[in-house]
Amino acid sequence: MREGKSVKFNIQQQQQSGHISQFKFAKLLDPEASWDKDQLGDVLHWIRQVVALVCGLLWGAVPFIGAIWIVVFLVLSSGIIYGYYSIILKIDEEDFGGHGALLQDGLFASLTLFLLVWILIYSLAHF
Image (cartoon, rainbow, N blue to C red; front, side, top):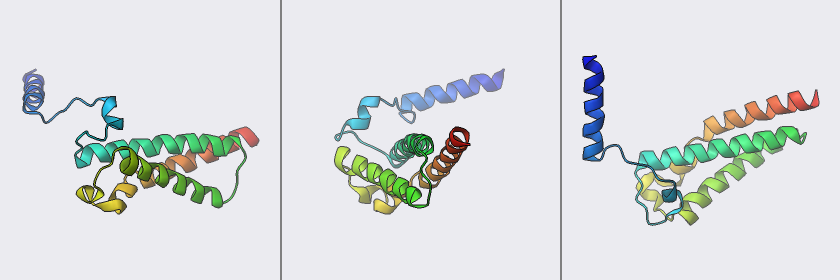
């Protein structure tokens, strides 16, 4: 019981000091919003996951086969991420570790999700 009160007190302290911020969806499209490295990394990660899910479903439903479609996914996913942070958010990539660090956020997890969904949907729909 005492532990629960201390956790609640710590959360209240963090909220008052500004460590836990309220995330608003309007911030996703606001080029004037301030981003820290963790927030931007999380957003880029989840955008990649959504792209991976959609592409995996599409590639599996339309019976695409071959390694070229993996390359198409990687180019499409990286292009969307690059366009998002450079055109929509207009951030200085050097503040976040450069293009390489931003383009790598969530890359391997999204590739895994993409392959899983693609193979699963393809196998279920066409066999």
